Length: 56
Image: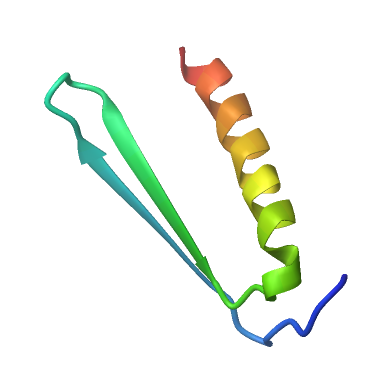
């Protein structure tokens, strides 16, 4: 893959309830190279959209 990847990556997923009763998800992916930032966002969005379709 492109970029200088670290040996260790940290992914933090935070779930919280909204006032409307929905669930808010915040994902922090640390250790990715700047040049891969957009690709990682696209990958996470694709994965979360597929998960959303399964649970609806």
